[in-house]
Amino acid sequence: MAISRSQLVKELEPGLNALFGLEYKNYANEHAEIFDSENSDRAFEEEVMLSGFGNAAVKPEGSSVNYDAAQETFTARYTHETLALAFSITEEAIEDNLYDRLASRYTKALARSMANAKQVKAANVLNRAFNSSYTGGDGLELCSTAHTIVAGTFKNELSTAADLNETSLEQALVDIGVMKDERGLKIAAKGTKMIVPNDLQFVAERLLKSPGRTGTADNDINAAKSMGMIPQGYVINHYLTDSDAWFIKTDVPNGLKHFVRAPIKTAMEGDFETGNVRYKARERYSFGWSDPRGIFGSPGA
Image (cartoon, rainbow, N blue to C red):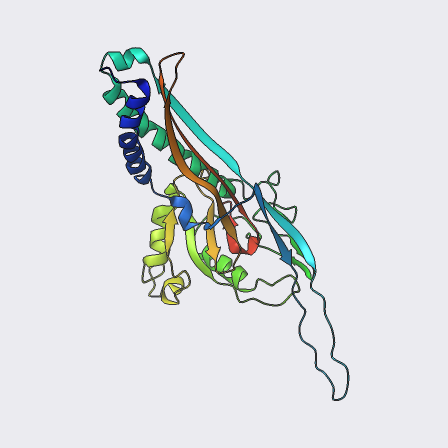
């Protein structure tokens, strides 16, 4: 008895799904080193940023306690996007016993496309970090020297753009350490991880792992290393497009986020009219940021 198209699809789909899954996992989730992932069950997510309270005041004996009111400063919105791609194999290719060879190659290529698109989407948050055309909830780009707060401004970008070197790294860590909250209270933020493009990997290696100061003949120690200033070291993101831009992830919560609305899913079906067999992959997610203090950067000189 001849096998029907629906039976063919049913027999072949599990194998293609397994092949797709293995290939998809071969590509490193570089975004996971930068973004904190959360699940979502809505078309978009919003995070309302609150100002918190000012410094507590002295209460004289017998007097009333002072009251303060937290304010909503801005709302960060994450709008999920659907990423999908498909391929089809003709009825004639199936008849000519080319299905196995073509399906394997196409499935691997599809997995690569889906994985690459995700990393590009994630890296674009940093690629556009200094571009005023791409703004966050506070109306400013991700990295700015003038983020507005209730008590003035704060910066998560070097005042003078600089390439990655000992001086610029130390200045960035100093600037991170003096960050304040919305009401001007110090938060004692710290750098946790450096994020660099492929071109800066050797510079980052020397700066963070050399026991002595780089590029000098004296016997001074490497302060950043000896003080454990960036405990998680550095990671290379191959999807950063600016060869001299660099970033430091901080320990401030609610910084860069990745919301998963629908995880990667594949499906396969036969088409009655054409006789083709079609296979698709789809996922839905968003990348963005809530609190800009979660990252510090420099676009390079």
